[in-house]
Length: 208
Image (cartoon, rainbow, N blue to C red):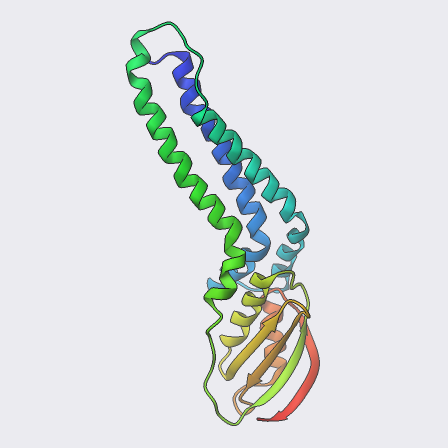
């Protein structure tokens, strides 16, 4: 039969882990949200509202680390000595289960926090073919980080006729090389807008 202290030891760290996961999701939604919605074919100018969460990212990140630290403290701190009781035999197994859960969640949470910085490298090698093309530079709104730039790039490269899309966060723009016989500049603007990143023509080049 479990004692009250066993129940507290078993459930205590889980509240910290739940808080850490929720905070990590809040910290990454501004960057990963638009990209995930784009992957599932969900679009609209309203998606750009998610990028407004970027200014709160430092607070969500701090909350994540605090919750995670409390969970580690709960699991690894030495418990106060208590009189032996029939439930003592089950405690080592409970502690081992909590440690495994703690490390699994910690890896997941830290992965969420660092994923926006890793995503640009994962898509860095994507390029298109070479034919008679034109080039246009679009000024793009709502780009707040490198992960946002990847979302804009994906929204453009998914359009039939786009060869290459080079998107930067500083300055927030997209340089798009496209086949003018298959796609119009207006369609490019529409593609970024539906992804939540409204854009406008900044500069149009000639044939390449």
